[in-house]
Image (cartoon, rainbow, N blue to C red; front, side, top):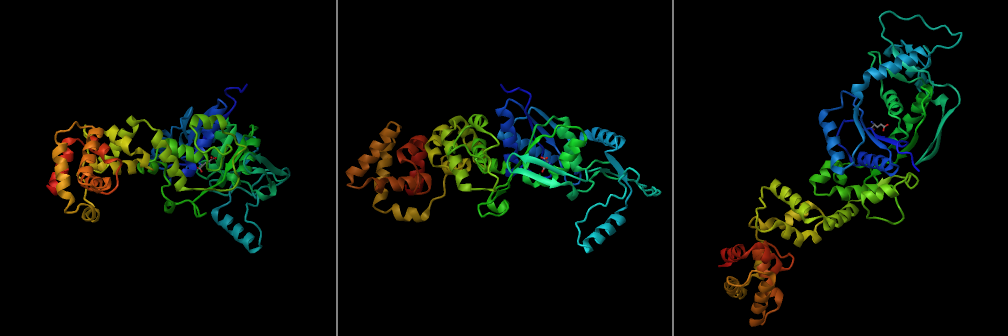
Amino acid sequence: MTDKKIIRTRFAPSPTGFLHIGGARTALFSWAYARKHGGDFILRIEDTDVARSTPEAVQAILDGMNWLGLNWDEGPFYQMQRMARYREVITQMLDEGKAYHCYCSREELDALRERQMTEGVKPRYDGLWRPELGKTLPSIPEGVAPVVRFKNPQTGVVAWDDLVKGRISISNTELDDLIIARDDGTPTYNFCVVVDDNDMGITQVIRGDDHVNNTPRQINMLQALGATVPAYAHLSMILGGDGQKLSKRHGAVSVMQYDEDGYLPEAVLNYLARLGWSHGDEEIFSMEQFCQWFDLDHITPSAAQFNTEKLNWLNAHYIKQASLDYLALEVSKRLAVSGIVAADAPDLQGVVALYRERANTLNELANSVAYFYQLPQLDTVAAEKHITAEIVPIILALAERLATVDWTAEAIHAEIEHAVKSNALKFPKVAMPLRILLTGGAQSPSIDAVMALLGRDETLSRIRTRIG
Ligand code: GLU
């Protein structure tokens, strides 16, 4: 049996922008992994880059997570609120000889780098201030505030079995002594991640593969702290359909933009779940099901490509599945954005039920039902073609009869049939002009159903004001 508290995963976004699709997938996989194992999912906001972090971005991340329903068990923890803890660990590492002060000035480091470049060697710190047994360090310069560097092992390799990418190993000779605190005492990025992953007891670090390069340094620091090194799963990038880096060109990149564009969170989640992960051929599944199936063994190491058509297909599916209550609420919000009030009549749930089969997004659904609540623009080309001089009196006569029938789709249908038969016409000859007069255009679901919902007064008024 799984120990309830064994698995602890985290999502650790930097609040420098909105929650984008890649971040959302990382969050989803971390969340699902914790949920599957009955563990904990932790949200940590990595806000130490004060120049680029904003409260708006923090809010956008929280909004995105909430919209997707990716609930966290602990946090949000803010790194800026953990400064005292980082300083404490820095002091401890200095005391234990695992880190040291380096007094090199920026100019010295620049000169070193230049020298190395001209010599054709990889630029790296040369260990000038690294204390070693029997080594005499330079004398400490006046008035220079030192940085703190981590004493990286100089021999051997640092290796891990990445749960997505397989074994990765790096020789320690490739790594120099990382600065863990700047000369003003503020801790640096990789160091904060290490302290947090350790303090928060993270067991699986699931993150984007742009962090693969940080991992050997982080593992070395964790080991120096005597910490248990978590397992790592580095997820490949998400590319646009054209194989290029995902950007605005490919559609929305912010999760909340999908909300605005009329996607259901269920559809976005289902879509993201299949971006680089699979369970046989399963395409449509609930998050409950996903949390049961999800594992880190079936993540593809290659980059996943974003496919808007597939997202639309899933969204259409979830629109068909959604409750009418939900759809009506979402559609009324979207109509309101266009200044249209979906009043009590026609019944919005009925209207939505009539159109939900045809919509890829909630916005499409809202657009297609807008004419119920606002007189539609007439498609003049269609009108000219279908509302001919011979048909006008037939429609007006039909309107006369409709004034007194029972206002049900069946009764309306019978009246249209009557007009068709008594004039020896084909059904579309009558239905099409009606459709254009009532909905503005030549496409709609069954016209009797539209009329039943539109109501008698509105139906007759639209007919009569336009051709009466
Ligand atoms: N804050 C990092 C980012 O937003 C993630 C760090 C991590 O997951 O270790 O890319």
